[in-house]
Each structure stands twice: as C-alpha cells, then as structure tokens.
Amino acid sequence: MQYAPLKPRRPLASILDAVGNTPLIRLRSIERSAPHSRIYAKAEFLNPGGSVKDRPALQMVQEAVADGRLTRDRILIDSTSGNTGVAYSLVCAAMGYRCTLVMPANVSQPRKDITRAFGTELVFSSELEGSDGAIMLVRKMVAEEPDRYFFCDQYGNPGNPRAHELGTGPEILRDCPDVTHFVAGVGTTGTVMGTSRALKKYDRRIRCVALHPDDAMHGLEGLKHLASSIVPRIWDAATLDEHLTITTDEGWDMADRLAREEGLMVGHSAGANVAGAVRVARANPGAVVVTVLCDGASRYLPVLRW
Ligand code: PMP
View (cartoon, rainbow, N blue to C red):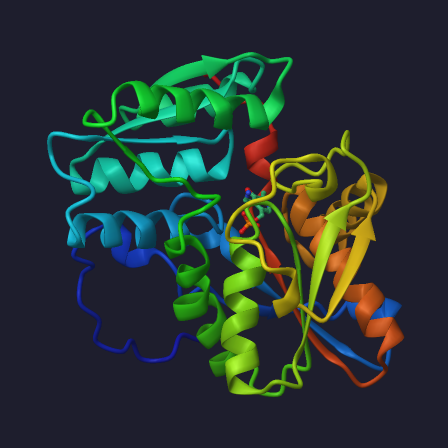
C-alpha cells in the first residue's frame, strides 16, 4: 500500500476534539438491493465513546457549563441505559464533572461496567418499568434535591437535536451535497430532528424520514416505540416528511448483512436504519439516501475478561 505524504496535523487538546466529523461510507453491496439509487451511511460508531450519542452529550454539557447550569459542585444526572450513558461518562470524565446515571436494574453487565469505569455512579430503577421507570426516578431524585443535580434531560434538552443540526447535518451536506433523502430511527429523536432541520434549511426538497420500531416490545436497542412511551419534548413530527415502521428482524438481518458484505460491525438500530434506507432507495429510483450507523456491534457482545 502506498501512503501519500502526511499533511501536518496538531495533537488534539483532549479526546473530546475527536467527537464528530465521522466518515460517510457508500454501501455498494447493500445498494444491489436498490440498483437505481445510492446509499451512504455515517459511521457514528467511530466517535470516541463508540456511538452517535457523543455528539449530543458533548453539546449539552458544553451549553450547560457555558450558561452556569452545570458547575463543579453539581452532579450531572440523567436516565439512560445505553450509549448516552457512556457518552455522558466520557465527557464528564474528560471535563472533570461528576456524573450519576439512572438505569433499569436489568441493564446488561457490560453497560454497567463501561460507565462505572469512567467514574460514573449508577442508580437502578425497577426492571419492570423499563426506560420510562428510569425517567420517572430521575425526575423524583431531582425534585427532591434540586441544588445537588444538573438534570441534563436528553429527551427535553434542545442541545440534543442542536448537536445534529450543527454537526451531523452540515457534515452530510459537505460530504454528499446531492443527498435527496435522510432516514433515521427515533430514540430520544435528537438525531432525526436535528439532522433534518439542517438538511431542510439547506434544501427544503430533501425528504426526511423517521423510522419507528413496529412494537413496544421490539429488540432494536436505542429506538423508542413512541406510541407506547413518554413522548420526548424535543420530538416534532411536523419537521418530517414520512414515517416508516421497521421490524426487529429487518434490523437484525441487515446488521448481519452489513458485517458480512460491507465489513461494518454495527448494532441493530444501525441495521434498522440501513434497512429503512434500502426501502426508501427502492421506492425512489435515482435517490441519494443517507442514514446513520448509530453504534458498533461490540456494544452488544459480553465484555471479555482475560
Ligand atoms: N440507536 C442507538 C444504538 C442509540 O443509542 C440511539 C440513542 N438512543 C438511537 C439509535 C436513537 O438516536 P436518537 O436518540 O438521537 O433518536
């Protein structure tokens, strides 16, 4: 392999400078399922915390520090069992803030181990109440001790979609200015809301599609079945052009294909996003469809101990 001469580059001021600016990857093999269109995916699993959630965590913490909501004597708190917890933990560790996360007790051991490794404290809510139980418990803790905590509130904090409006969206336009469609699954809804806003501001004709799991008991971690959940305050369906439902099997099958055909070991919500992108690409010959690979498959493997 020939290497081009290296361009000068400065060291990063901290790991946080490695958040965002992820590569956009063309999925040439997957495109064979939609031969008249192009499909690209943004490799968010290459963020330092391993997921798309590094972006909103960093944005929300920076905004809260800037306007004084988060100070050294307060603890950042939020409910999350997943990638946001890793992202908050990484950002707080790198910036020197304390972090407490509320999560359902039945969250996998690796999730607990990873966040604790950053020095984060964990509080467990009832495993019977899922993520809504964790939301309710964090609200109760903050109401009881409002001066102790900064409630980051990823479901209601405009910094969450703003991270995508300022980052993910403009990066997509820089790398793929002829994008015609954007597809993303909904969890907190920050990714689809913020990215769609940036794309629509650039060109109102870019069609933005939200993907929804088909059932409350789905197996697409990171995604939320809004019809049976507490609806995030940042959600605004009117920004979007289309809503599709996606099954757990479609997401899992596409995650397998991405590993075997593209060398992309990604999680199941990333699989669901690409399955959604294929549907949109097939229905709109000539389309240039962009989606997001939210995290990597390693998140879903047990932590190995040597
Ligand atoms: N997939 C995964 C793996 C996630 O962790 C998340 C975040 N909850 C999402 C998808 C959905 O992203 P958002 O919260 O921005 O809607």
